[in-house]
Image (tube, rainbow, N blue to C red; front, side, top):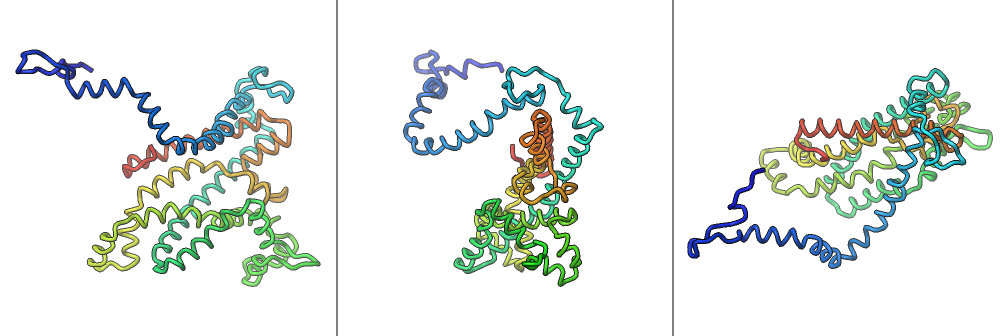
Length: 351
């Protein structure tokens, strides 16, 4: 970029000479004392920066340092030698997973398909539920009742995964000689949705056809209320004058939701959707690991449990790392694609 003299000097008519531009002098002073100003700001608000230390430690120890182990995807793994002393094997693990002809390749593609389907169903059915719940919360006029309903919907999120999966298994358990079927199993039998033979003898948790439905419904029950906090915060930030203008035009409650609330929180919805698409293939293995069994592998086994089974429980750590790396790379590409489409379609994007 070509610079002009006027950027640094200005002509003083009284003295007939050029003097330094005051604005440029201020910029030079700010640039010269930049790090000193940063240090002063840190010292002034040291309590706030101290609160960042635990978060930075978590990201450093559990997010960045483990990245070094990704080299195991390209090396012949040896449980005795560290990664730095192992020799490279190229893309052999990736070729085995993608284009192999053995059981490993078949199981990997089955796990990848299940991962995508579980995440896609969660996106289709789970993502709209927090928005709907936030809209209902906004229509409750009693602050006390709203607080009660919010606490009830938030509680499942604060239960551990073990407790939550145990409750699910109790609700859909099969019958036995000492105890009857779970409440949900009994209800499905009474309305004719499933046969008594399936619910009593086989059990819904042992039937591959019911695993995805159980996983999605329990996921919505667990997270929908907690995820509605973001959307409810965006809704209460809407100016009351927007509602008053809509009421003057004769808009009812549904019309206000359609023409006032939803357009006002559209940017929040788009950003949350992009982040959700980014984690489309990141199905947590904890919940699946606690719910699935050998009878439901065909619909329940995901990439994370595949990696856990062959990497941690088995000895194929390199193969398991390659599977997880492929999963994460595809997730990154989905984020970039979704963000690009959102930026071109609605001028709202994550970055």
